[in-house]
Image (cartoon, rainbow, N blue to C red; front, side, top):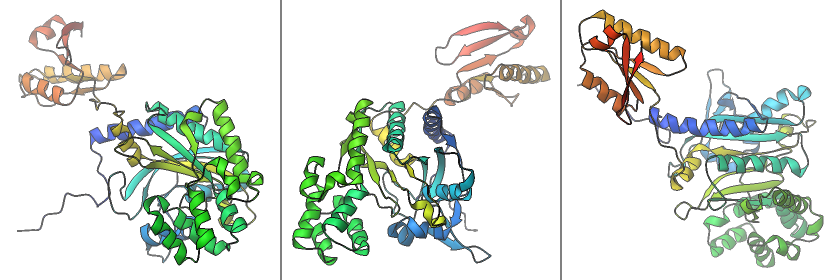
Length: 429
């Protein structure tokens, strides 16, 4: 007996059956609708990118553990994109001289990371990337956050369901380099450890700092920073009021308050973000559902990322990427997903007699309905009983069924049956 092929898709990837695609398209359509409402333009680029783009700035964990990388037949080292930001910046760098700033772009694309599949996380996932380029002011950060809040509200969410926790990388640099006097190399290692703090006990965290040579007062200061309110920062970071990150956060919360959006956001110094290219404001959006308290997506400033394509290139950048998997879990948890419905409005049945006129009439009526903007199917089996056709319509969520029997054909009419109410009406052919 021959071996049969498995019907399973690759581990961590998903098949989307028609009912699944309805939900996916609902998410994509909502993303697009809100982004276009703000005047953002859609773009795209290939899923395969040069490996070096991600090796340069995506972060050690992604590059060393999660990247799907290989060499093509020409010996070029490639990677399936694990995120959308580096490829986006590559496109901008390629067209740098022609850019009309500010650049407002959004993209929906799939990414791949070699991770352990679990609730809210797979190896393949889709993201909405929203960025504004060429705006150094905090107003750019505010606009992208405003879009994120509007997207969540478009799905029916409110401030009781999600929250945005905000910090700034420049505060972290001020603590590690300016206040504690660490080198850039050591500060980077400490920052990566700080990014894992939420998953560690205090003892485990301090032990990891000790392994990096951070002990006593310095370690206690880092731990205090991770739990500090914005009012407590002057006691931890020297001259913090003159820190650009501190000023940005203060200005951002003023903008949020003026727009009546302050209920959605709070300062949280433990927000680090794991990307090496983050260099300013950082934030993460959390689900407040008690059964799914987790980060859904995040964003940051990445003003210097474009320099990997040329030291002379300068382009301020801020934005975020929202994933479909975590968003879907959020929507499920709060009962915000729409009911899956049939996509066809009409089924034009065929009277079960061996007469070609019934098939011909069915095709003609279905064609007329389509020309009027309706979705319509014709029944294709002239031998099927009417009961079978009605059961098909019911199981597939068809809204209305057109019935044309001998009597109707002689009168020049058709019966239209509403499958939800069971009512029928006569309409001229």
